[in-house]
Length: 167
Length: 100
Image (cartoon, rainbow over all chains, first blue to last red; front, side, top):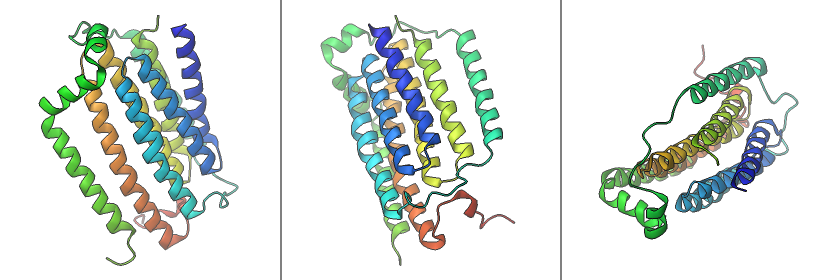
């Protein structure tokens, strides 16, 4: 049952990612990208990370995709599709297939070591995933959390300054 | 039973598809979306290995990757709007002002 769900989700994710690169109209690419994000959220649930799945749907499939679709609509790119929409197909294809071959070799020949940490399925079931994430984030990773908030502030100011007509 | 290798292979395939898109497409927004596909495949690797190892640190890292992706989306799309205002196009072939 789990295997069927995994293979189905993986198939849809790969097809959606492929159509992101293939579709001529950027709006279709954006819709395929949303499908890909939703499939990854399903995989996160299967990996016992429901909080990450929720964040994936809210932040990626929600906020970032709204931003991308908004910019596509704002620039009116749907009508401006050209006859030639790709370049370097051969070089890019060869390079990505080579990379796929290399990564598959790495994964097939290597062993994922270091199992048996303290976060097991029982701990996640009893504590709750969100609580574990919150505990880790506000104790061990407090400084990176604050730095991330400063990064977001800088990004907001940068976006406003860049898109203003006159500073 | 699905092992961690399945997830690693899936994320490798997604990453390579994203690379293919970044290398071949001309539209800057589509290139940006392909970069998002690559970032997401790396997130999948992090969460799969975090589950495999039994440690929370990989998932915290995914949280920060998402933060950086949001910041990147805001600034990158603002750059594209500014560029479109100057050139009336976001074709990467027109991004050649620094070329000599």
